[in-house]
Length: 414
Image (cartoon, rainbow, N blue to C red; front, side, top):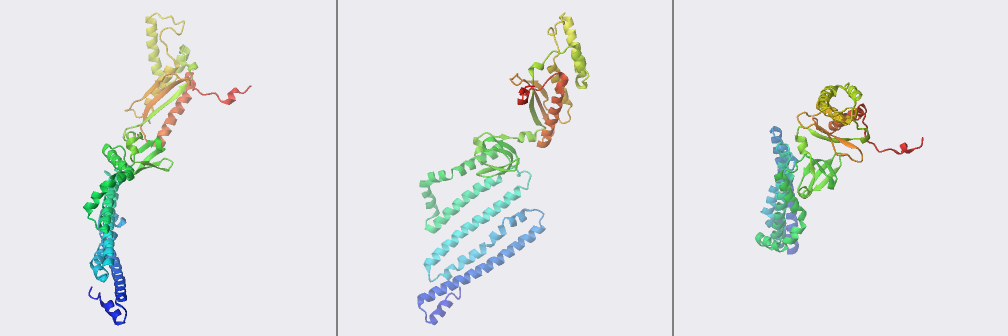
């Protein structure tokens, strides 16, 4: 700085002591340098932001817009003022080498921090841009950025300490071996999260947008974010549940992605039928059930087969138990199967089955196993309700009843 002694000489001419002249000269130069750096910073920042803005308006991609949104131009603009400060700091403190050393170290530490800010802004821009691409929307990009930034900040902190203590970086890193156990203990969750995020990505266990059910943490909804430490799940009641990332590899949870990517959503529900209503069908019952169009053809063919078998074996049909017979629950099961195969909302290319399960104290379960074509939750529930509304209402036509525990009103005296 050409006039670095101007204030100093002027103060001496006023008759002040050498020490006072040195301090006044230093403070004046500090103020002048701060003003110059501040003005340069504003000018450079506006110039760079203006260039980026004009370029963003002309560009067809939104990457440059994301650069501005993540403050990349603003952080880059600080580089020139920082270089100016480092260049002229020795002229400002030439009378005070001790202060010069402290300020110079401070500026070097700030240079490290500024570098980390720029890198972080660039990585966040890349993250936001990749999220706009279909191939990367469901990838845990934030986890990888966080891992990189952890190592970057660790290196930055170690470099800063090495600068402040005048210890070479290599010697400083070597000395950390003694406290590595403490570091591992402090960053245990981070290390576990890092390993888990890699496993989740490689094994494709969870993606952003997947519907997962994690009973241990009360999560049941869509994954909105996967980071190094946590996985955010927006439940269907719009609450947010956070799950440790490492829990995805250490605990069991349900991912509904397979259902979402398949051709149908499974229906697996039972009707419990009272056992005392199950019976063989006599001729009158059979003739009555033939009026039901869905199974009329089945009953006619089945009746012919049974009568042919019984006649060829000289079965005594004076007792209904003898020989082969139709039962009301068997015919109802066939009705359910036919009804499902003709239902417009059921996927005919996937399994359709009406099966009888083992009897229980609540009756005989008749399970419906099929897949709805529409996988959307609200439509799926509507389809199930529509099916079971019909089947429960159909039971009396087969002289069957749904099992139901008696209410307190049934025990009141008449």
